[in-house]
Amino acid sequence: MNRVYIYFLHILKAALQGEKMTSLANAETAVADGIHTEGPSQIPGADPSPLTIDEWAQIMHLAQTHHVLPLVFEAVHVLPEIQSAPFFGALRNQIRVQVLTQTQKTLDFQLLYQRFAAAGLQPLVVKGLVCRGLYPFPDHRISSEGKFTYAYASNTDDNRQEINGRE
Image (cartoon, rainbow, N blue to C red):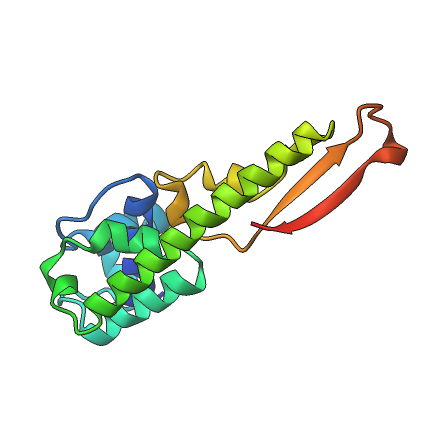
């Protein structure tokens, strides 16, 4: 595992615990303790030197790929090395747009849920909002769709249908 992945996992762990990073000094040791029993010296790529701008960009790319960029950014945005990165301003603006868009999608999804309930359907959210609720900042976990399963009041298998809706 290279050091970009080691740092990414450490930052993601902190983000999922709702922590803000104040330093990355112990990142490799902390991740190593959770992954390997041999210790950090046995990890390929274990290197105590500071992350380069290119490595920070790779970490942010990983976060974007895994739809956790706002979570990761929330954890590291106070670090001087990330604040001085040339992409910091653009990244911060991109994340603001993503979070605002996710918040609007969540509101739209909740409105649809209420409309189903008002129409006598018994909606059950099977992904999306339920999964995002496990994160410290739910609207920082970007999702692309939500799923409802609903049944008519008779609750028979013949009346069950599934709706794929954009969240």
